Image (cartoon, rainbow, N blue to C red; front, side, top):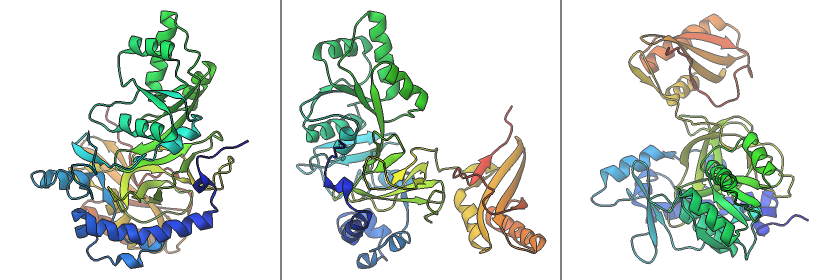
Length: 416
């Protein structure tokens, strides 16, 4: 019998979409009024009109670099760069730091990061003890998982990172139901326990994050009696998606609106095409609107076999920032998109950089079914020079022939 964390997971897709779109203009209005950064970013936006994904797609994308730059510029006045809607005190129990540094607030809401849903899907239930080996130092990962576990009704052992022998001892004596942390560290703990001659029979389930979790590692844990599931979350928006017992992609969380856009742009791609994950959070304390995660993924067709009705993504498929230096000039994915937009007969494009250091060559491969290819190629070549200030070759290819991997710029140079 399938069990769900709550009834939100089994809403009809139509009801879910209607409720998300009903909440969207309110969140946009809140971001504008409560966040100085979004008051500026969205100053020309009428929030009442943002009631559809099409309207949402016309808003600017805010990326990690924007958070960092605004925080750096406003460090003396506002350490959050104007993005936080809450201030130090009762409404902000903790502050964390990610590399940059970028400072993130933690609001006072129960399960602020919305991790309980993912922990439940990984098999944990109320009344169990969880051994949490995410870091409690500087970064929010430890608190993200602990607050989610508490919301689920679990007790947490704050294992943190390192001290492998002590981790083994604590697991052997406390007998937790499972582990939360990176998969690589649990593998180290299991191997250390075997070397010490210590059995850990209670640890039969795990929820992983922060690292890749390939099938080979999943099988390794299964051989050691541990069923591990992964989740995808960030320090900025919390839970984005989580794995279920079906092990077919990751189901989107109920508290976010997710888009897949072409790297370097804010333009949504067709379903199934790989692109950058852009997330709009419904969190009132940190209302990020169209936050570009920088991570690549794609939407999976069809519903989850477990009965959860939200959309699914394939999981992490690389990074979207493909900026490349060519002949001393930086070329960005957004520039490739600018070139494509000039030619409605072009469906997709991929800039391939070849050669050796100091002897670069670049070819823009474009998908088109247009006749008069020589004239089109010449015009695209002129656009390349206009946009990038560099010369490049143009290769016209048939629609659908470019790889569906989200790459807009492919660096195929030899560095040997």
